[in-house]
Figure 1 (cartoon, rainbow, N blue to C red):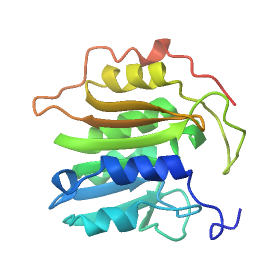
Figure 2 (tube, rainbow, N blue to C red):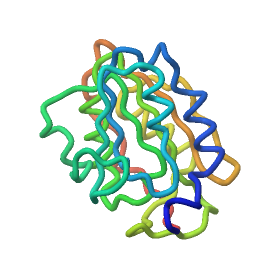
Figure 3 (tube, helix red, strand yellow):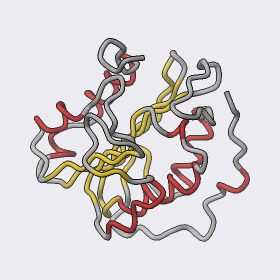
Length: 187
């Protein structure tokens, strides 16, 4: 993959373009975790919706990366974001629980999280690793376990899963996320 000819899964891009609206983004600080534009990016769409700022974070330098950082460390930024985006990254992180916790922690109360990732049946595709597959029901349990309100939870026939969720204004970490009981399939 050279990053210029291969595109993000068309269905994932279509979901992101439809799921993130001006009402979600306008005037908000936006964080994209896994922002390296290897095969397509939602950044241009989001920027047209008028955010206050956009910060792209990834493990490596490259197109679309403003800050090189492991997503599990996002809380050290000491900031909250009204929109948190992760497209096609979660299957590539070894510590999915740590990354999900970080994404939820930096999401501002009332903010929107938009995620796309791959489900069982999708081909192995390391960049640099390929660790997990997220069945729709398990992704729903992960998001609900974090205390987020699911707006959309949809299967992608390629296969994958799409999520749009909101952090309640009165959000606090649940006593138990139930994440320890979740055994995600591997590729």
